[in-house]
Image (cartoon, rainbow over all chains, first blue to last red; front, side, top):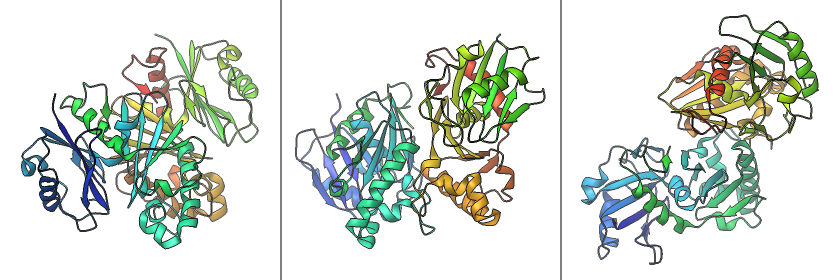
Length: 230
Length: 230
């Protein structure tokens, strides 16, 4: 079986995992992070780790393993970037919230994944399917979008108390809008929500690791496996 | 092959279709419409039509053919109501926007269906799948929900000009949020939008008819067909 390195690219940090147990490693990310620098840092940070292939979770729209547009909270140059060539290993790319969903989903109920970090990650999962979404772009107050309120910049602008109220209301309504049985809340800011609404649970960022394994269990065409990434 | 009667339950009218060509029939709906009255009217309006089974599109959350909650814009008593027993024919129930999606989707691209009527209908379709949604409940301005602005009552409150602007902005952002290649706009008020944003087309309510046929082509468990209704 292949040994998989899982890389979770976020707006504040890039996290690297080589197994379910071993301590995660990370390096700083930010609004200027470009793919070349990311690859150089991955090579350095994971230099003593042995791996055959990479699963990369990325905070923008991804379909069929291709990044569809430049991320809102990182630098430029990601669309069409050839990660495999740069890293010298096969790389599969998936939306970051979809990676969490793929690793966390345990069958049964329809589950909505929301990631509260620099931006707002989102995916919905049900039996054998993960549909990645970009709910941060939903229309919202002041002619803006939902991420303006729920993301890191929103929290800093409106303050933690109002941000908590906004997040709670948004989660409650999103759960109804997606006819979801459950909401899993992940991302670095999830722990700041003190009272979770009914049907909402906290996720674990380490679930990105089993997500990466599942991603590599799939056939290359993504269609003959028991999982469809949509 | 079974002869199917398709019934599209809306907030203003209930539409009945017996074929792709024959003129639709309808009767008035409204905030007090109950299932008993609906069945009585269906029997009367379709008295001279011959049919073996019924496909019923319904404006509320439906899963596995069951209405999950009372509709926002009709009367009460719909959850657990036994349509088949009341009508004396087998009845399959599906969300009304999902019925449109099932009848209109022609393969390929990811398509978001939005129905502008009394409320806001919604479903997303891609290869072999229709996922019904309740996007009217998305959090929106003034501590309210999206349907408050985009539905019929919203149009009356804010006026057609502002309503058009709201609808256009919402569609544009929803298309991004669902990573949709296309938006199909249906419902009685769709024709009031004069300039459709790029990637948005008008649907045809008569697509409910082929949607009903497809619904009855499925196996009873909904799983072995080429369509999954989610």
